[in-house]
Amino acid sequence: MGGKHIVRFEPVGIEIEVDEDQTILRAAAEQGVMLMHGCKEGQCASCKSFVLDGEDIDLDRYSTFALPEYELDEGYTLLCRAHAFEDLTIELLNYDEEMIRSGLPIQERTAEVVAITPVTHDLRHLVLKLSGPGELKFFPGQYVDLRVPGWDASRSFSMANTSSRDSGQLEFVIKVYPGGLFSEFLDTELQVGHQLELSGPFGVFTLRDNPGARLVFVGGGAGLAPIVSLLRSMADRSIDRPATFYYGARTRGDLCFTDELRELEERLPQFRFVPALSEDEWDGESGLITDVVRRLEPDLTGADAYVCGPPPMVEAAIPLLERLGVATKHIYYDKFTTTGDAGDSKVLEAGNL
Image 1 (cartoon, rainbow, N blue to C red):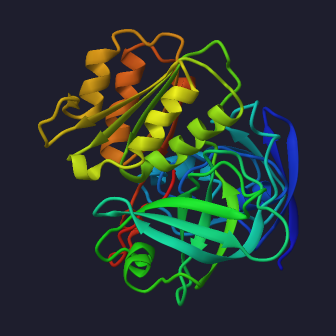
Image 2: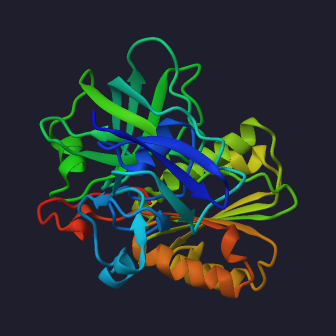
């Protein structure tokens, strides 16, 4: 352990103690302060902030796309890569007052693999059962880091279930990439009965308390996992808000969880599931999912939007939703990126932003 310093966040007036060996983001999470973040690898800029007071900061490796050199010189930093070596005052550029004080304790746990089920040609439904007593508390929509056995590395995956309280289980939907450090291990070596180490929860892709707003979910690929978690939670809590889930896939064989999503339409009378295929002809919606949203939703003023999936889809959906009337601050997203963006030439893997 290194020395400890006080970091104060403005304009919210929250102070935390940060060890020099920790990133500021990690220290905040361990103390129940939920700062806006995504990849935790210096790629996405979700945690970009401005240093108001103090200079002695070291940064772990990061992408200059997330923090260009001129911004670093001006005083900006990435909380997920920043280590404090003196007391600091930091201005949060992106924060949610409703969420910031609601963080859950970060846990380090071990879990046993109880099921690995192919749900499409490249998506796997992974179910883990926590070892030892006690649940891992998380909010629907959050994720954990799964450590890759034999490597000093972890990958981030969203839970598809809503709680581990009764079953002690965590569910994931993971996309398999050729050469993916975790996903290739999942597909070729991991077996039922094996143990995995994990830490979490992380993430701010959670349902906001805005009962008067319509909900629009836009997803693709493994991005359905946190959205399914949110929808299951809504059904369990009888949150009957107008909601539509637009899910994009290439072919019919790329669709999964459709039976459950149709059942959720029965449990949530104001919910609709709208899948769309971009490469198959069928009786349902066709085309890119953003084109389908544009065609079916001429006005989304006042809605809350949740977007999760691969970067091209997310990057196309956000400006579209803004043009359709969704306020920027009411667009919540998880962008699945590759670790190659941070300079890792070997690994291609999905992680949450």
